[in-house]
Length: 412
Image (cartoon, rainbow, N blue to C red; front, side, top):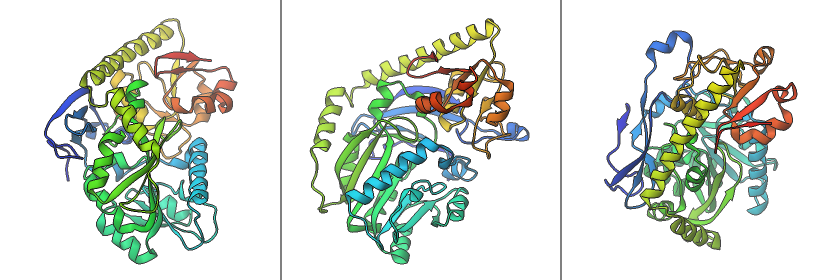
């Protein structure tokens, strides 16, 4: 399906959608390109709407999934911090639900196999689902991978080939799906009767409270809160039995949502009602709250430009550090291009030598970046700040980070 604009809420079908944030027109955030591809680059509106009926925050401009994921360059395992995070999740799930040899564990959107590789129990049957070419990396690591987009047909294929799943994970995936009803309909078909479905994704309340606008891009079609999810899951044969906030995720702080088939064996924990009450008190349906957020986003843009321009006016050189998808939302919304940022350091080899989408800033290896050694680097992977302050050679050699969010500042 080509790019299109939805007129209905993805969760409840309402047509009462209120726009509260516009970041302009952007290319897909992971579409790094060669210099000869610049003339082919396409841009799409990046605007966020709130459903006035179920309170789901969402994009209505949809870029074709094939365009986003066909030539996908994001490899989860290039982040040691993320690898450790998912290993801890796999270990927790194994212990909490008493996994044993022969149990099927499915990871939807398995990328290069980063979460599946975190399971250490011998005899588990790990199965990945991945529509992009990074499935090659997961297969090379020895995992069985179903190639394509998850839904009822694929759920039946997995259950038929390997058996029903004891655990299904979708980390940093569930908000990416346009036809989320079809996706969710596949879950009861692949889950065992005592199976567990786990989502991890950015949390709407954090997005608003911490002004995390860079995590908004065309891959992320929805910005999750529990309020719209509980009735939506119910309509698709599932129930949420627990929820927890985790301080670290693929795109910053996240929520982890635990679900089962309706009437499953897990007792519904107080955390679900507590979060629903918390969201109501916070104002999950209050459009004015979202409009204040939009004003704060504009303020960060002005302050970041002022800071970078003052550093450059003093003779300093400025680069950028890390080339995540969310970094491209920030670069393009703020208007940072090669006239202000001289290069982006990135450890993922398949991004090196390419240009960042929209801004066309060259992506270089960490070694090349260190040989140039700009005095300041805009930290686009700001959610790994603590890790980089302790471990990055750039900081050890006297470089300083410009941390853009929740307010621009220089560290150390």
